[in-house]
Length: 175
Image (cartoon, rainbow, N blue to C red; front, side, top):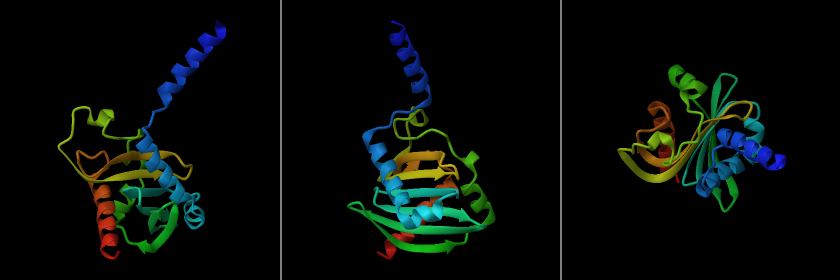
């Protein structure tokens, strides 16, 4: 009986600190982790704050702040094959650069259409599915979300989200 009671208490404790993710949410997270696990990317982001933004779990932007500059990778994931399409140093305005890598700009929980954030609904939702996550130096996640390309309201700051959408669109022109 003590074992059953202990198991029940542990289950309640753990459920309060974990969020169950759908299979689709896990697919997006796992594909982002696959991209981050690529040897070039892994060695670059290790020990640095970085952001992953993807569209359709296929096209990724990885942005990191490294020694005062910003490095951006455009990556394609196709049948579990990772191809770095471009890597470039990008210029971000001081304000945008500071906001993008400010943890307090992001919600702590994983946001999807089923989250409390959207319990009263949304005005607009259109386009491919996107995935977003800010990971700090320790690997802690902030602002993690899986939503559509155009979404209102958006849990991610509009200037930050617009930056990534514009960059994906820029890269898509050259493909």
